[in-house]
Image 1 (cartoon, helix red, strand yellow):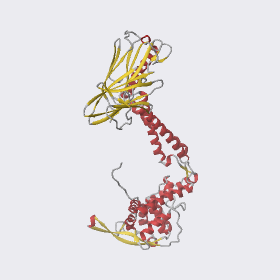
Image 2 (tube, one colour):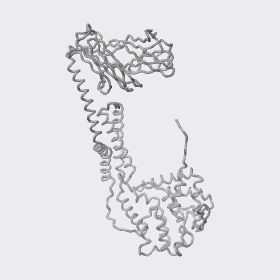
Image 3 (cartoon, one colour):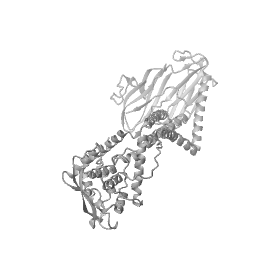
Image 4 (spheres, helix red, strand yellow):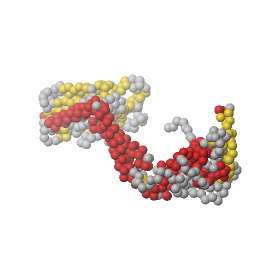
Length: 582
């Protein structure tokens, strides 16, 4: 088959080269390549590098990326130019006993630009009668076009061909029109029945895809429900199974509502994570550890009064405060208490400072103190792991399924998007893309579940028993200001109340109870209480709220913020390919 391609470029700007890629196919060969313009033939042997320099009026041919590349050089500025590329294809025609099948891709899917008008003609070896053996098809069905046949020529016309959209012209004609099959593939048997079946199947598949897509679009609620079930249903079933197997807490038989004293000697920084079942310590645990160090004598404290400015300095109020100074440095510290002591030591610097001034002092070395705070949180997590409170079996299961859904989403989306046709989507591609997003949604849901430890992790028997007792103690701290029970009799117990109240985030409730119930003589001996238990709640200096201290420590210990600027149907035809210009 001798091919002549007349390609018109509408240049806007200056251009000097163009190229045409023609894919190779098994059994297909291309030779006798020529390039001409207005009857003037270009000279062969030119540079074949895209973007490279070549003398105008020259062309070159090379094999690249499983295709034949034709490159020609010229000079054009803001004008239309028409180039004629000709070559011979051997092995494209398939000769059966009854017909010759020529399926030629007259426009390839590698062109990056759309095409306004496409005209193709296939001239037969000799005129043929308009009978059942002489047939013409244009494909794919979603391209706007028509085909026609005359005794000697089959034609195709198409308009507005999108970028990356192929167009094929397929012709069958009687075998006896050939005088030789030297340039064709020869296959025994009749080919027309098989060709008719292929074209009919292609048309039916296109129509079937369109019907199914239209049906999905016409029933949006049903489609949305199916996608919702597929998008989160599998993940929810997996999470439910993991929770029942690995996350659901087992009953221990503990039935007390209150514990009137800390049930164990577990440090205040560890208890909230045990009760919440989340190893994520924060500023409350940091503040509780600081007050515990004061209680144990690592730091000395003195009750003082600080003047606080309000309304932009227009008003002042007295606030009960604590002034800290270094204490007994021989007090033994755990690994997670050491970073807290380092932060406080850096603030005191061997002298003394008030609690109300700590936030500003910590912020002065935010980078260093942020590192210490990170070390504190990590050390608390390590200490919790060492306690053996939790069984972690469900996390591995979730990770495996996250990977499964992630790989499935990648495969489905890659294959679906790669084959997706925007002008005429195939049902299979739509399903693959939809299932890919559903798989990705399931993976994301499982990732959220993996970040919620109680769903996949439960406490061990020992951990559950201790957690239930600490939860009873937390309830007692919350309720004891209104309980008609005898208040604690020892200073140590009162101080431990406050320390654990800070850790639980209910320090104000403990302070309220102390104001109402704590004997004055115990208050006067305390190193960490600074609210007078006598008099009316509204009289005297107001308290420095521990919640304000805790949140202030949290913001001051956060890493410094950073900012930056900008930074860097058919488909079986031979031929086709694409091209371009520069």
